[in-house]
Image (tube, rainbow, N blue to C red; front, side, top):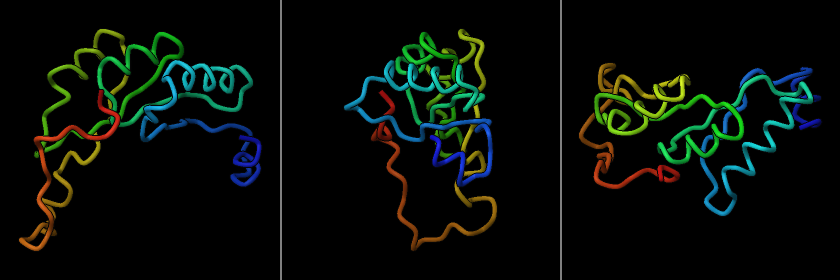
Length: 125
């Protein structure tokens, strides 16, 4: 963390994201480590990306979090469990790719790979 702060020429990181959950590291350990950084004044807020409701609850029990998951024209998956968990815990939700990864900009074409909406994204347990 010290190296990151030095390179950023900052005393604190306002919002620290964990963009992908490492299944080999308990989320409680990650949240605890971030809590220590917050207590030291090196981080202001913590957010998780691409996580499921159970992971959100486990992390939030240790350290309050915000959440960023895909919520777009292509997937409404967060409506089932993630958004209710965020509402229940009183935490923020940031949608990524709300406009469908270029669909409304005209950049989607037949040569692009089609998303597989039948498989969960990594870390969404």
